[in-house]
Amino acid sequence: MREELRSLPGDLSDLVGRHLVAAERALEEDDPDKAHEHTKVARRFAARIGVVREAAGIVAYRAGHFSEALSDLRAARRMTGSDAYLPVMADCERGLGRPERAIDLVRSPEAERLDRAGRIELTIVESGARRDLGQQDAAVITLQRLPELRDPQPKPWSARLAFAYADALADAGHQEAATDWFARAMAFDEDGETDAAERYAELTGAVIEDVEEDFEEDLDSEDDFDDAGAADEGKLAEEEEEDAEALAEADDLLEPEATEPSESPEASESAEASAPVEPEAAVAAEAAEPEAGEPADSGEEEKPAEAGTPGITPAFIEPNFGDVLEVETDESAQDRPKKNDE
Image (cartoon, rainbow, N blue to C red):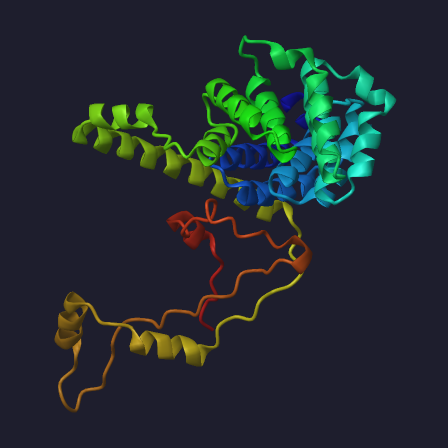
């Protein structure tokens, strides 16, 4: 990824890279919508970079924006010449209600160039498309043709393949066989990638307990929990600071074209009059108050009203991600332009 981003200017390359990292972090936190917002910003600044369009397409697919995902993945395929996105593209066609087009992609010459994992994923999509067309038995037979289905050794695709086969069996009315294959998928799925445990519980009425989670909770002490919480807070604060810097750099790269109206002097004076007075400030004010008959001279100059900051055109308004917006720092407050009294 870094090699492709090097074609961009230095500051822009760092900005796009940070948004892609933030998108990946959001996916790890199971928040595809937030990841989608980050990839949209990255695509805005680097739409001609293949890795950016690929990331935007995958994240849009995870967020359920199938039309946008299909467009980005087609662009990435043209830029990179890779057919690795073919299974996701076919599944996007299913998501758009076009299972026939998904089967066309499965039968395309490009599908023959996929590696072993890619062919398995494409076959799983084909089985789902057959079910969408009401061909339940054909969906089962499609997966039975894969020799990897009978491999007892766990592989990266074992859990997904067993789950897809069990799901097809259940849809075809073979409940007993589906139960056995859901149990097999559950044994392969150590990371909880599929819903095999829930489907097995639905068919058998069994209660699945997370024994590993309960065991870890028994071992964790209160002090360890506090230390872990402090470490997580520190890591989260660091990540939010990095994302805020990325957005700040994005603002610097955009050309301001409009200026928001500054606050009126009457509103500023009203705000100052309504502001609460600190105890020490009140004592100082009483001490400095002149006696009767003497001219009042506070010796302090009236604070100038803050001028409005330059606005950003609607086409370049940065989205509110929640995880990247920070409270204004002291340095940024000092850098804000102020209007001097005349």
